[in-house]
Image (cartoon, rainbow, N blue to C red):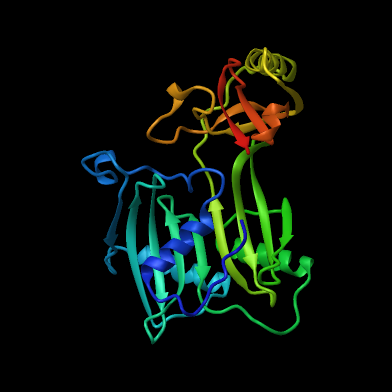
Length: 308
């Protein structure tokens, strides 16, 4: 996702919250955390709601202090006032503490969020990016992102990818999440670096993981499961398919191929073989790529993805 183009004209806390929501959303829900009780984040009709409670300065001193340390670690501007709130976000099935800083004119200058384990969830500065001057190189941007991430308490190593940001002239550094040597689909830490090397935003997307199965099916078995289902789905149709890759990943179970698997709350990610499939013929007119999630424990189809 492209970084946000922060502007000094952003004046409301609601606008700031929307920016941070956009910042942390990727392929899935937001950072996993102990989920609030159903009654606290849904209305009487079962629709999701967002509940905010102001943080008391004395009882929440640790959170406010951590926000200040994070602000300094990332090099964000210091405001003249800080305010905190506890958020139960039913739309995202997430619960977190949020601290904002404002300047003398009442404009929000930065915002940080922490999950219920006090880990940094997201942070963004909201002053204007530089418009002129020399631009840092890719290596300098990576070093700045690594240094700031470690100072903010995040564990990072060698980035998985680093992308140039055409909108601002800066860089976005990504660290894919890996558990037991296996990629967690969609989870990552990413930091956007402004052209002058300053940190503009940090986002961490991390989901709960189920216990890995003690025994798992192999690549050949998973491929047979995928082929068996695909042959049945594509039989007697003017379409075909080709399996491009089958790889082990942590994935979120979903109802892509079985509506009965749809649940009201996100399930922990499970270890699965992901078969990427390229449709051909008529199916390729409306689907560019599809993925099947084959449970690594028992070989059942537990969901998938589509790219239209």
